[in-house]
Image (cartoon, rainbow, N blue to C red; front, side, top):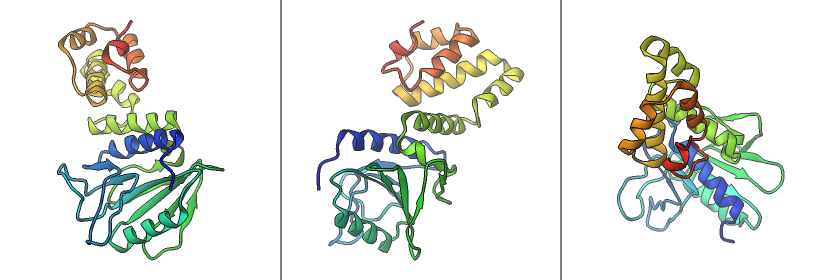
Length: 226
């Protein structure tokens, strides 16, 4: 089949971002190789669960697999991959169709395939805490909104409004500064001392402005530009 194109690779990154940050997800991977039996080698675009931090193919299958299908998709290869993953224990396979009207095909063991459309949600009970909107698997803005919600939940908040409410009790500015620091660490991996001092000295309006830029800035320096 053809290599992943620009559209496919971008949306694949969005899908991984959304699923990997769900509060219930402990491991996820992109193009992770799975070999539950010697004669089977499969690598879903995005795998959720059973992705250990070890080298080599994984001798298992992921509970949830995400595939992106665009122009040039080898349909037979995709069908074979779906069949083998389901046979060996995968519970949910979501195929995002990018060529033509956007939709997601859902494959589950013992059930006929069904389609989920924009404006609707996908669920994976026991794997994901939150429903996933169809749009968040290919639309950057929807993916960022879902990711932000997941990151907030990982730190004990349900929404930005929840931060505000808790901030009124413990100091609104302190609450906003704390969550912004958490978001920066999730986004960039670390928080330099100069950045922490800048955040601690900022007012609420500035903190909210920076929080709104968290997924568009390419560096901490760019993010904290006043």
